[in-house]
Length: 117
Image (cartoon, rainbow, N blue to C red):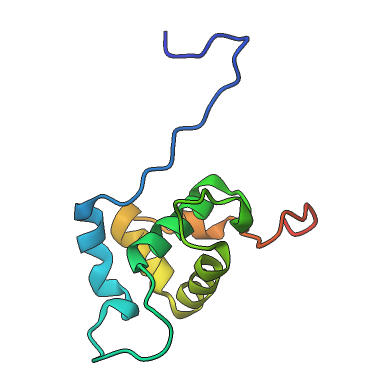
């Protein structure tokens, strides 16, 4: 029997970070991964970590600030999310990984405001 005992709450499966195979599949879709020569300014962030952060929020439906510490800062992840969603990159990633972009139809908010959903 696969159902949890009635006295224990049902738990959703843990969100899995990208596998190496998945990462290699989406690298060509990410404008940040194209070699544009030497970069100046702020230190570069690990784009794979940002992708995992965005996918965590999309999968769990939790607010950005609730991301576990192992992910990118929520402000950074949210900024990339907006950029990628507006440019179509996020839709391309969803199709490459899941053959569907239905996960983008769910409302994603920066704050845990019940009115935002």
